[in-house]
Length: 177
Length: 147
Image (cartoon, rainbow over all chains, first blue to last red; front, side, top):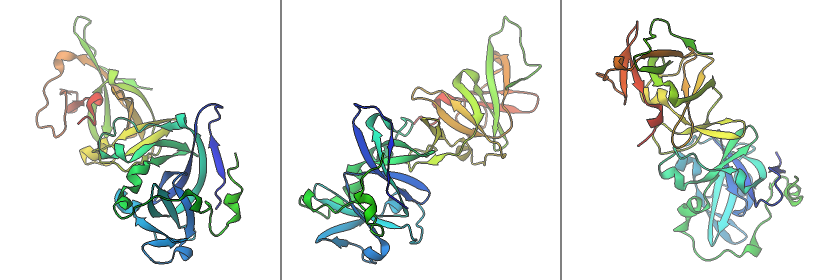
């Protein structure tokens, strides 16, 4: 498994957004790369609920439970994704990390309007990824579960390098387009 | 691609209504042909966690993504066949896909006066008509999924 970046779309003057594509159950979700502080294997994260990494606590967010998805057992591809924004820190267990993508903002398709209920607050849109679709998760909604527990501002200088902890050299190479 | 039903043509003086008759889980339904954007082979749907009843997946066709209305789920049946078909319903909010049985839909043209109110229907219909087999409920593709 690698975290090589893929670029979708090539317009020169269109704002680019970066997403980390992760898999939970059989679904692909896209997390804004700005949120992602690091990745840990299950061995590194241990069996504790709240992770403490470099002195910072990351509260668990159970996306599978929030979405009613099947909980797979830990496997070799299972990772904990560390997230932080504006002082809110959380970690998400994912079955697989597919990789980083850069997409033109115009390539993030809006959720079809037939989706009329609460889910409109959950997603920023749909991202064409491979032959399928990754669901772009809304940052504010994503971290809302951890918001009540945490406070303070994240020092962005403390951000961990975004990497696969079992292959730490990969992410330092940056996004290969 | 669509077979025309014989025996239901009416004189030019009557107001013709064009209906597409299809089946979902073996249950026959009709929809106004003008509400259908096309029929194609069903491609796998991609689940999207959702609170909207019967709309919890999308299909991707090339660079476009369309919501899927789970008509079979609403009817409490299972779509039949290995080569399922995709009915694209025209809606004000954009096209919406419906997975239907592999049996090819049939285009019926009939006098609009033959359309009657549906009795004992468990689904929202705009009427029904009787063909040589049975009463066929007519649903509104444009209203599917509307709250």
